[in-house]
Image (cartoon, rainbow, N blue to C red; front, side, top):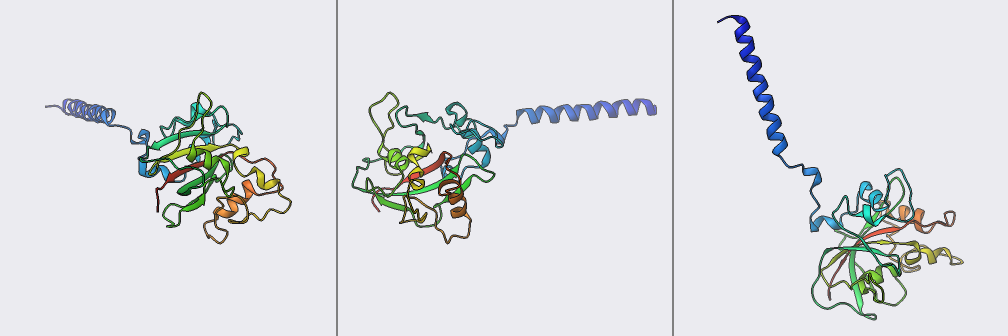
Length: 235
């Protein structure tokens, strides 16, 4: 056997291995395209999720999120209530009876903004202290109450949440913290202004990020809020 023949056989063998490897790779699923589990929905959305929810790249600021693009990273189709401007999608359906005004609501939430280099703001997940208030008492932004109580009267009415349910909402400024900027002397502290407001003494920087976007008198424009809400039953 000549050296030329041995070299030819070797090249054929290497080519066969490469082709088999390529075929195997093509058959393997791409893990990067898998949707998150229900457990992960309360994790604060990464910048890519927030940017897509805003219908833009992470370097672009758009005040009105795009419903069409909001579903792309996370598989959630955010419907829009034409009357309120709130966008919503359910990651998990709850069970039982919906809450009514006057009842105490208890939620865990993850909050992010639709703008900024670091849009992630704050989460109560794993803090052991859910956010609680009496529905309709004026202490909580209207977007959260609308997400929980639901709405009726238009073609895209929002159904109420049920205990155990998880819902993502995109809240426009008029249903968020806009009223704070209309106050003569806003305190920008939980219990003093409309909530929820991240704890000021928390070391994770959540309060500072919230203040920059939603209680800063030098910035009259307030970006939309992205919230993942988990509603609890009686606790």
